[in-house]
Amino acid sequence: MSPRTDSWRRAVTLALVATLLALVPAVASARFGSSDADGLRVGTATMVAPAGVTGTYKCGVSGLVTETLDIEVDGFTDAGPAGATYQYTLRSRGATLHSRTSASKEQELEGRQTNDVIATQWELDVVAKVGNWTSPPATVTIDCPWTGITLRRIAF
Image (cartoon, rainbow, N blue to C red; front, side, top):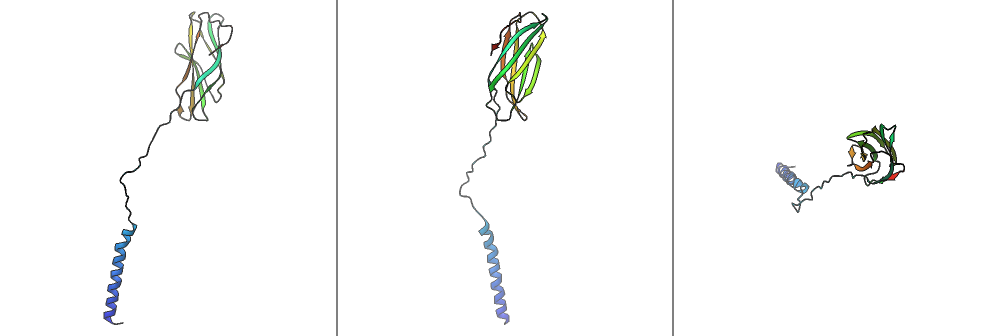
């Protein structure tokens, strides 16, 4: 091979390599036809309060010094996610008298407090819980007469 052919071959090779290096990034690049992009939409899930709590209750007096309330919750509707547990809380005069957590929509609770010889208002809250999520309470208000005596069960 003559030195002239060798130089020519090196020049052509160098030109081909330079051309390939210049074209390869152009082949790998891409362009988007629009600058508009769909945004990511984020929402929040909420727990809904149980609805339509049904059951019966009986007001009473024990030994004339203690007011009593016996409650049987028969059920309710929970439109929240599956697998919930339910916290039942019975309150009167600002104090919690009975609290229980259960997976059942049927529950029996009883409240006892000192008889103040006036009508008493009791509140039953039912709250749904899934993991660390809790619903607002479904509240049932029960008014017992000052005598505390109700001989029959009353539906709520």
